[in-house]
Image 1 (cartoon, rainbow, N blue to C red):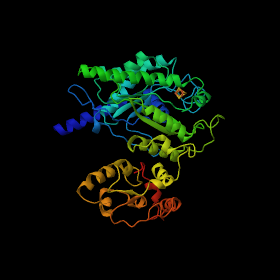
Image 2: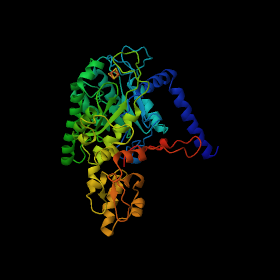
Image 3: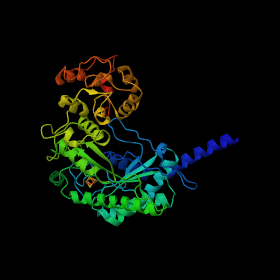
Image 4: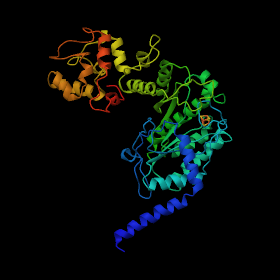
Length: 443
Ligand code: SF4
């Protein structure tokens, strides 16, 4: 047998033995638990830089982790799985709630560790997203989850990305131990107002969420100090923490949601707040709204608003206020703000501050930086703006530059500009809908 066929044969044998090893029972558990985990979207991975080292497998560096999303916007790049979908709690919005009659399963620590390693070796996954229902008690569950990540790191020398959910109500010791092995930890706020959380999840309260969040924050800050003194001190949750809020299951406005996000982002270790449009899984429960499908447009607008707060120097109070407590579903929040504030325009791209240029609809962070850098070398013209990447179709109503005809939002009117920018063009080809090209983040 030539060396090539020997290698090929070895590869097939290893695949075959893996599937034989993964007995039917584990396969069935995997199906049940991966299905149960799909409703948690707070699993995008980023911000960690641990490299592959000799004697380890995997790498959590940039290229090692990629994100992909299914059609409904859920992240699928990681092995996204629950340790168990049994749960002692009965949260109204959750498919895994105690009172639901669904298939249940629990993986042992070893089964979960083996699955992760085998999937990783075969390039099926780039990392692990581990969550769980609560069995016996928060600490009992958390202790098992910690054993999974600890075994992966210490026994199998697994160096890939791990995102682990911290169970609300878990002790500080277990949260701290989890942070030594996981890249990112997260605890879901789920429902922004505590009264609404109590109504839908009577066994939970905000304290049980904010406490572990605080433990994670403490761990991250302490670790920063330790690493300044000892360069080789073990890292604690290097990709920080994230959280998730369910949107549309209760009556919170976008203002309530974005105000809470602002407060959460002020915590030093908070990297991302995820917004999950409520998926009507338990339609029989009278405490829940009668939605036919998840409010995905609202979810998308919240992500855009979140983006404005993190990268465009907007405050939540500028995006939503008492007069406009909810985001406009028809247009992105940046355009909505500009149309509500025509007095702030037009912006002279040759003179205005960076922060004001950033507020022009159609100009993104990269374009704003390029504008400020290029105007040192001469006046900016409309053709230069196009080359820089400005979306002139939008921006033309909000800027002045050297030779651009003046027909700004003030000469026209906010209503006119809105009408022009929201007009749906006829499909270019049969079966092609231009609305599919909605830009996810505002520029
Ligand atoms: S604790 Fe988590 S898994 Fe259990 S019912 Fe509530 S949301 Fe679902």
